[in-house]
Amino acid sequence: MKNLSRIIISALVLAPAMAFAHTGTGHLAGFADGFGHPFSGMDHMLAMVAVGIWAAQMGGRAVWAVPASFVGMMALGAAWGLSGGAVPFVEQGILLSVLVLGVLISVAARFPMAASMAVGGLFAVFHGHAHGTEVPAAVSGMAYAFGFAIATTLLHAVGIGFGVLAQKEMKAAVVRYAGLVIALCGVYLAV
Image (cartoon, rainbow, N blue to C red; front, side):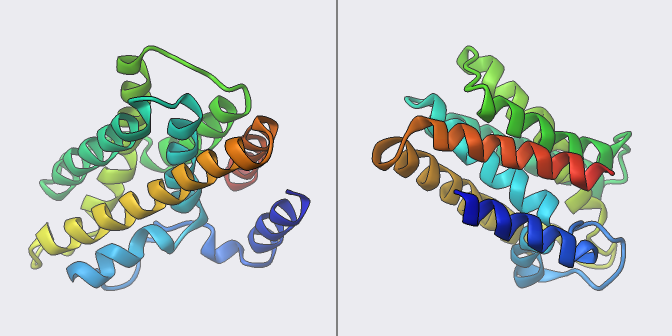
């Protein structure tokens, strides 16, 4: 676990320009760009993996329901952003998602299913809106949206895999420490 923490912290310190996926520059269009977008910044990767870890930590139906609600609400947020709708404090919401999801993992928070889905869905709106506003107006956003939805689902799966494996093969505390690292990365990204 110490090595993973060192790798994450080193990557954040040595590559601050890569820490944020939403720089507002560059040409974004098509499936490949949409697929690559969630991998382009630590804010997205940490939040997407954290959703999966938290879902695995809760177990049961949460393993699929929380990530599914995230992807669904992210798609709605993207559609809203693509149509020109405004969502205040998008970047702050994205950074807050990293921090809050990390805290939820570190304290092993368990809410009723609807509340867990709502937490994931709320943060997904910020991520989706950011995606939607970055699609050029002259380009159909469908392929782009499909790309980032697939990438998000894969990152959720990575988090679920880590969460399940860590709880079975190691100690449940490892998952909680991972949440703490994610939360600390959220603080770092916000500073």
